[in-house]
Length: 261
Image (tube, rainbow, N blue to C red; front, top):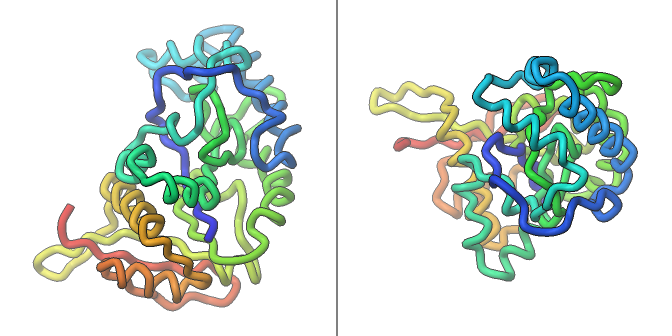
């Protein structure tokens, strides 16, 4: 099972090791695109402060992120597992997983990123600020920048087995599963069912639910190979899951129903 996650805006304040070595990162097919994005971002952030603030879509209170971006090639790096600290990753609690489960997570999880394309949990990268929708001078919109190299990299990475795609909408355009690959891809929508029976899509708790869901699957050592088997595995873990109909060649959507937020 390959699990695709979004990054988080919340990140650790600083790394604790050597600077990033792009040559050691997973998915080496992404290396040229990573080098171009990194160079464009650092060049932008070493220039005019107001321009960088506008391009990156930052508020004045986040301007210190620009100075940090300017030093990325020499900044201390850390494993991606320790870098991301948002709601999903808090619920996933990678640091609290047993060693064998953590190894399983390292093999299964791929985190999409505006700057790096995609990384594994044990890839060492520095804290950064660069969303997927940013349009970097000389590179263009990162969503478009990553499409071709990501398609090449994912041809091998997602060649077989179930794909659990939990990326947010900002990151899905960078790689879109199609055809046979889409048939073995599952997405998850979290719905809150109120006492009157009505349902609504949740946002903040959507991330927390997805983090807990991934954690539970990893701890259970579940090995579903199809979206239908994934739905059964989640039901075994006491999740309420429904499977809306979907057209062939489209990812299978699973609705996870929660009663408490």
